[in-house]
Image (cartoon, rainbow, N blue to C red; front, side, top):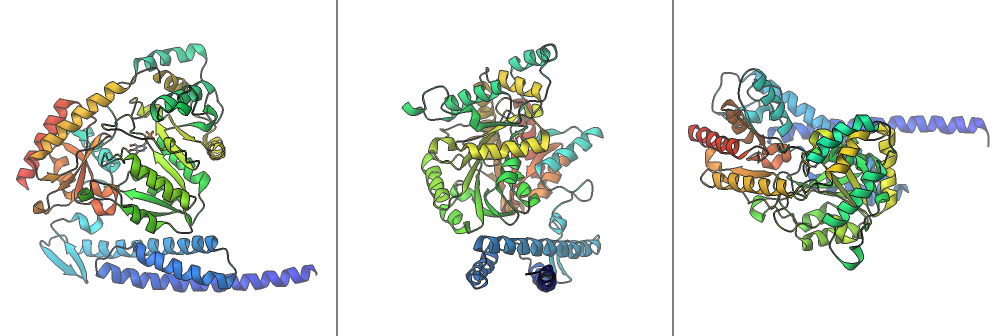
Length: 514
Ligand SMILES: Cc1ncc(COP(=O)(O)O)c(C=O)c1O
């Protein structure tokens, strides 16, 4: 044993690393070629079946290399993610080329072997509204573009964003004026102030848990198992960043608010999607969920009441999902920010006694406090919450103390009135859509109607969003909630009744002109 020997081994490692990189380079060249063919044939770049096929093939072989199968799976996922990235870049290049050649052409044509639908020109880059504004992919892009139009003097009815128009509770206004005099403007514990966590524990015990004997007492939900976060979105971000490593996988049921997918992507985590559809009343197929579980799966993400569909899962379905998760020892992240807006019985994930369940919620929707940026997460497993607290301390020390006190006071108010108003608005939109060329399932909850555009209209979501914006109404494109929903729009009910009525009139007139 000598240092010379270490040097020799290190040299060997260098060479092997070079060989590995050379092979990866070859693999990426193959990926490019496959990508070109997919573009020519107008096929999706991501092919779950093919990916899982590669994974199981490699995992079978990994035994021969005495590698940890989970590690092998993560490495394969990283290779696949890079291949998808390269294929996307190549596709965009090709489509831009075609786009440049197309300006004065009309009708459906084939150019350079790529099928192009000129009427729905949005197919070309799936992103810009005829070059008038920035790239549009999601409800937030529409919102930003609508704001620019407003700044230029156009009047817009906002049916694209999910921001309740109600005032925050009056208790919050009083607290805001108290804060300066009472000196509540300091760093706090990373987990949040004790007062708010105590109150949240009572709130969760009262409103989120079933009223069984064992859960009746005030603090069934231990305040120590709660972390106060700057909004639900950050709750999701710290959950992923504390529990996942690059190459891990999560399962998301689509259509879905895009944040889970985006956070995962940012962290090098692979998202496997399970698609639900209107015909099945947005009920996810449990077999599809099971099919997506593999050695790298770590979290199943749920969001009910759902954005954008408003679906609420039954207790029985949730129970089955819990069983699936526990069979594979997975975390269950349940984003319940719309729980106040439930128009039929809603069951929180915290009622299933599953230790690896994490509830994420927020003051944004329930109490109309979006700009206060206060949310929270809870898990029956304190270790999980401790991990979240560590990441939060690292990233931002604590949530702003004044906002925590405001949130604490908000819990004294009753948000039921918000729920009642939102339900009436949902009914109003559903009734208005009845006579229009849309199909939808009446939402069980939340603040949106997710409506499918009748195919007779032969118009994509982005094209319809564009026409509606031209006529002064902003709605969200369905494709922002998953690639299979480009024939849907999401109509938000966060504006007053009169504006909703006018918005529906504009939608009707716009469709009449198509
Ligand atoms: C499903 C879902 N979760 C979380 C959030 C974010 O809420 P917050 O404002 O608390 O970050 C939203 C916002 O639209 C949402 O739709």
